[in-house]
Image 1 (spheres, rainbow, N blue to C red):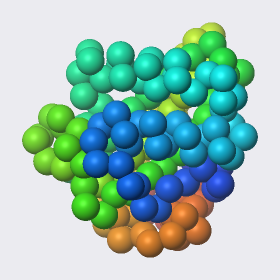
Image 2: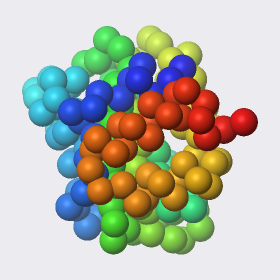
Image 3: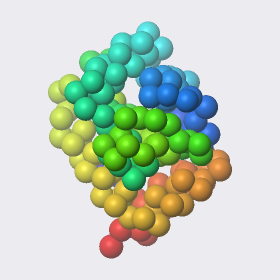
Length: 158
């Protein structure tokens, strides 16, 4: 699975404004609604589902990265977005560091394979220090989209 399979350019946020975990999740879910990937009627329940998932354990995986995600019946295919916070957000990460890179996923409950493949792709790409550094330095959603395309074309991970 590639980023282009689930990330729509219009949903990418190069400058996260939110200062806390729930705010970031609201902002990114909102970007998916604005770009037409999620139904506005489902926005609140999707945010709630992601926050419930966060209660099980932070999706802040360390090294300034978080991958908030959930399964939700309002979607018929995997959708996601990417957000960057220059200042960083306290996401209660495993390593205690602020998070700068966010990959948010929402998938249908009946498609667990897609959900796992997307998480696997994200984690594989994020192991590449160069990819992460370039993402953190991105100033526009176009820059981020280009990096995702380069990652899809295996320009980072060997």
